[in-house]
Image (tube, rainbow, N blue to C red; front, side):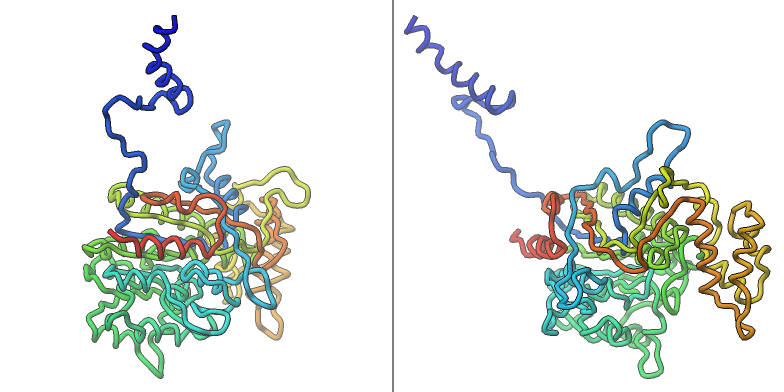
Amino acid sequence: MFRKLVRYRGWFVTLAFVLLFGLTAVPLDSGKEENVVASEPKVKNIIFMIGDGMGNQVMSTHRYMKDDLSTKRVEATVFDAHLVGMQTTYADDPDQNITGSASAATAMAAGVKTYNTAISVDINGKEVKTVLEEAKSKGKATGLVATSELTHASPAAFGAHEETRKNMAQIADDYYDERIRGKHKIDVLLGGGAAYFEREDRNLVTEFQEDGYSLVTDKRGMLKNKDKQVIGLFADEGLPKMIDRTSAIPSLKEMTESALKRLSSNKNGFFLMIEGSQIDWGAHDNDIVATMSEMEGFEQAFQTVIDFAKKDKETLVVMTADHSTGGFTMGANGQYNWFAEPVQKAERTPDYMAEEIANGAGVEETLNEFSGLDLTEDEINFVSQAAQPVDSVIDAEVVDNAIEEIYNARSNSGWTTTGHTGEDVGVYAYGPMHTRFAGLIDNTDHAKNIFGILRKKK
């Protein structure tokens, strides 16, 4: 019996390994060489997406907006399959521990906590290097795409350095003046903010053009132009909301597609930051119509990026929010329902309708044309009262607030603030090395991880 046990001891060892480590374990005496630790996949391109103000409540509400009511379960959005974790968003401001967009973007772009209005400078005002600048130093193409002004807080933190986000003209100057190894640091700029590039004191558009950049000012021009370096300015300030946009102004998806086509021709790869800027603006305004309109545009851009990454196989995609905005609540006032239908029916934002009314259009006619709702007499009177002139002037903001209240009441949408809130926000990722962004991370970890990837020896 003892000899039989000795004879079969190899099988006992193998069986023990199988039981302990799974059916795929290889016996020690198999003669096969196994790579226990696989080498990390290659990252050639990095796309970093920010849904400004896109808290988890807004993500959930977007899912309700996409739900097919004919099925028993709420359908997933494009985002859902790529959720990998959460990030903390607290600020390192001596006076405020809830982050602003500038300090949050600086944390994600440079890996440094700072005060709330800082644009890629530390708490002492010293410039800090950004991941976009690191990518350019490695020979990669770079781009910024946003639905806000290109000089707004989030894009600015990736491509400029200023002691305050209010210096929007100086931020535009930084895009031109600050160089990496003698070259412009940003190859593709697509968004709003023409007023900050074409000014009485300086015309940056002309200066960029003299250096070989093309200027595009509408969707047709953007799609027709094939140049690798381009500055696209589609509004003096931020772009109109997606639901309000004319066909001449490109969507975030179309700007994203245009940027990808240009940047992907670089043999060394690229870094691209894309921001759905006005999710935040809608939430600041406590406007559920505007917020959901911008969420739809951001999801379309995210789908475009994921499709590109799946085909390319060397592209890392990371998507998150800088913070949450508005303290949004589904099922407000103790109601155990949230209704998407009133929001889905809107054909323009309350802002748009309010401006029409303030400029002389009739209240009832405007609401009938653009609200998508079968309004009650009380609702029409509510807006009409808000539209009463004061010193012969209709206050568009007052009218806007009244229209927003109708959509909030009908959908059971609630808000606790017109500012930011401090809760954690979701992190979504896809592609090689995407697991580096999994779990609970800090907003500074985004930059730290991306710096590590960019500096990784081949």
